[in-house]
Image 1 (cartoon, one colour):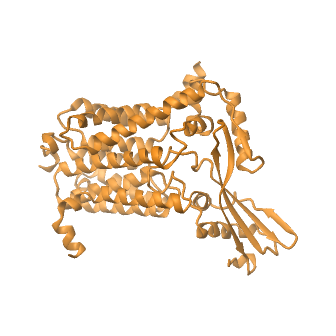
Image 2 (cartoon, helix red, strand yellow):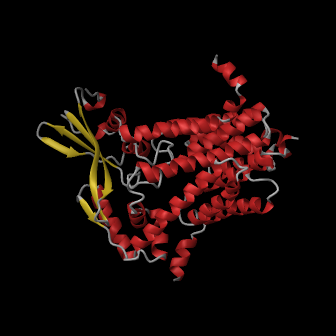
Image 3 (cartoon, rainbow over the protein chains, first blue to last red):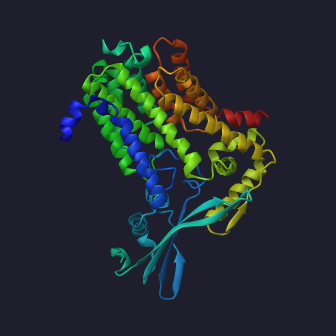
Length: 151
Length: 290
């Protein structure tokens, strides 16, 4: 049965499409939160206000490394959405996109870029918070910073 | 006349859809969504829909709004709030309803299931998928660090202004990597308050989920509207998440039995109250008065 026919001949299914879509997206979000480091607050799974690990505490750090130097890069000039994307859903691509956005701040001779995403977590001895690493990626820079490319 | 069709599930009558469509457009005007390339067409469509009666029920207007809202959540998948998704499903439900000439019952049923399913996922996250919530850690930390709950913490004497300031400064150091752990300062009342807030939230959200998902002919389902209103009135005066609040009130109205004018009135009052509470700094005023 084609999708078009299914749609025409299954009015109940058609009428429930919005709710089915909600369930599908929310289920995918749960998987991504557990296997892709997506914060439970985002992605349409209704996990907001369920955990400390949200946008309030997620934080990205970027360090550039070259011969004889290793220094952090100020990310405040990177567009907010790029920072939020990298912090809330730190896939390799999102972290590299963030790094590329900051390449004008890389010193000459940069050979490696390290991007790490941190969150805060409570421990049983409340009210204490500690910094916890969500993920860290290292990108080798093969070309000059202006043509940033990673391996 | 579709707009005043009666005879919903369980023999209940449902309200006119025009009101719901108008409120949805008012929501889009009051809370412009997305970046400029979404905002401009959405504002224009919403304004046209409100100003020209012929546009209000035109499916193409609602398909365009659905498309714009979908592009917004796809583009902002990693940072978009959950009510942006809920809005998209709702716009989709309206577009389907108008395009397929279903009666009001279908729109009402979709509204009911959307509320029920979103609350069900919220409860699953809080009870099964994370350990922060039931342990009380979430409220404990949120009341001390989330700016949106600052006034509540101050009014309820959970934290003093000096403690708040010190916590925020130390929190900044934690995020900046200048320290690895952070001891948060608070009043002794905080743990008890956090426990009550935790169980109140779980009870209400679970009750809303169950009553909205059960068949509306069941007796227990009659409690769904008072429960949703109770949730709104115990949440939105403090948590300034107006977008979600308005949307829930619209969905509440969409599935509210027509014969129940009191409930309809309460939903409308709540819709307006959330707007006022968003813009009027009433919690700060209470704290200053004290």
